[in-house]
Length: 136
Image 1 (tube, rainbow, N blue to C red):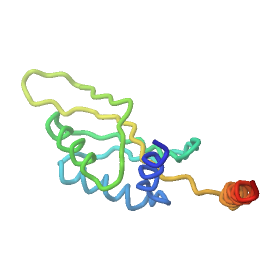
Image 2: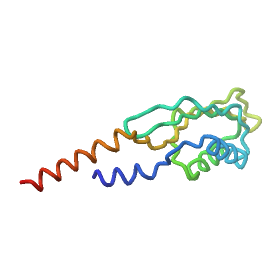
Image 3: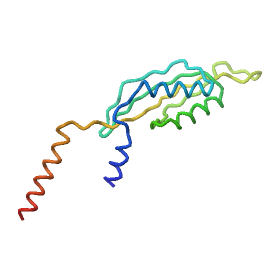
């Protein structure tokens, strides 16, 4: 199970490359015909094995355009999860197709770089264990 976990962790990028990701989000929105009100890169959140990069998106568009946009985000090469999804209709009208507001919290992830201390400690322990095993 640990091997499988490490394999999955290795699939995370080593750096966030926020500008490339925001460009991908923007191009996906343009391709879906939505209009962005805001794309905010928020502070990173450090976890035990990885780092989250939250990005808040606010946009205007029609219901099916939002569906196309969300589908496009899922197809980006980076892992992106979607949270706190809110769609509202600020001016309800039965006469026309409404323009909706979308507010979406997304997160992308990167691996947490090991510090030199982290890399040497297990190797040192393994060498000591091997020496002890050979001595018995």
